[in-house]
Image (tube, rainbow, N blue to C red; front, side, top):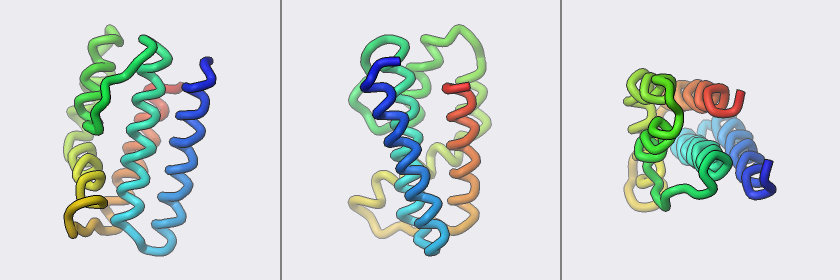
Amino acid sequence: MRDEVRVMLRRAEDFFKDAEEDFKRKSYDIAMFHIEQACQLIIKAKLLDLIGFFERTHSLRKLLHMLSRIFKTEDVLRFIRENKQVLRNLEYAYITARYLPEEFDKEDVLEAFEVYKKLRDLLWK
């Protein structure tokens, strides 16, 4: 595994751990942002690992669609369909953490934690 990929995966796990700490403090908005960052990094790490680059975007769904064209299975597209709302919330969390006063709740974060774990298992089993 390339060093860049390894660093990205480590950072993703660090962001995930940050999200767990945010959750304990009931900082749900920041937890969502940290989970989004973790998801973004594991997707970009997989793209880097497979094709040597990734598109400069923050859209999780766009990055996942790019991966779906590389993988020749339905797994990634099914993941997008099954987790459409949570992925949308995570993308929104990225924007709102920087520009808008939006709040997320405990249930949003719990769903996002599960999506991250599923995504990690799907891409890095």
